[in-house]
Image 1 (tube, one colour):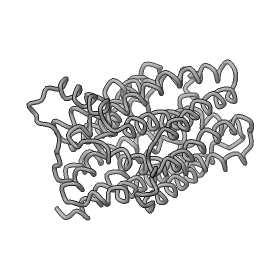
Image 2 (image 1 turned 90 degrees about the horizontal axis):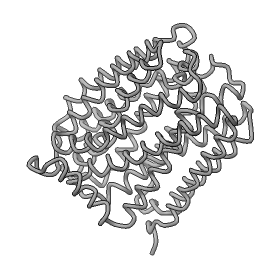
Image 3 (image 1 turned 135 degrees about the vertical axis):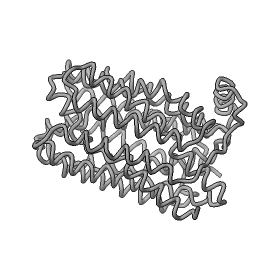
Length: 388
């Protein structure tokens, strides 16, 4: 199949996979069901806990049986999870829905980028990976922006509809994946799963120092970003006086900023992936979250726009720098191990910060999260990227 056509289909799959109509209102939805902020963070943490448990098995699965089947499983599980959340009259129903979503997410993470990298390697176009991955990320942000605009607008009229619309788009993404050619370039199927895992972890341990540092940077950065965006952003907007009816437009602006960051990353030459770039990405996130702890104003939304720009910039540059250092035989397993650690950090920190929000207020939670995000600065300083 023509590589340009494959990349276009891959981008459409990215869009369908990220039509998150529920994104601007999911925390508000759970709060409207009568759950406390601590209960909400427990529900959201069940997503990341299940993803944590499933990350490494899903990575082994994708390496051994193919990325397409892993991505098919993603869409089906997430669709079922959305239907359960739409009917979450009880805490346990919401919990099960998020667990299914978390398992589906685990199958998506490493498999999605590994598919593209392996396909471009086979077609001898791996030098274009950063540009094409950034383009696919752009489509993801377009999906989130469009879904958020629609979902935030219709929520006040039909609260369950955003979840049902997302379920439909997830099923569509599962069907689309089989129009992509099969790509499997991993270790032999004869290798046992445990041995495969052992060799993947050994690759991290004995690999380049920059690989270990980049994995640590990714885990600290992404867990900080997700805790803010998933659990604290919507309560912050509500406390800042943003009407719920405007959430769709606000989140559209957020995703447009993320798209801008992704576009900037798409045009960055490889030699610009230096430790200085990673340092400023980390500095922007840590300082931005801490400053938000001092202000409650509709104008502080401008700072959140900046954080979303960094969100869009972060993924392509980190993925490109990391994938260059990973042996293709263990890529899915290594990336799954990376996400395992990141999800574990979320599971530990998000409920703690949810409890702190209930007991000490949102500002205290933001200050502590900003301090944790500051760890990314230390990791960036240990990188050798761009040194002569």
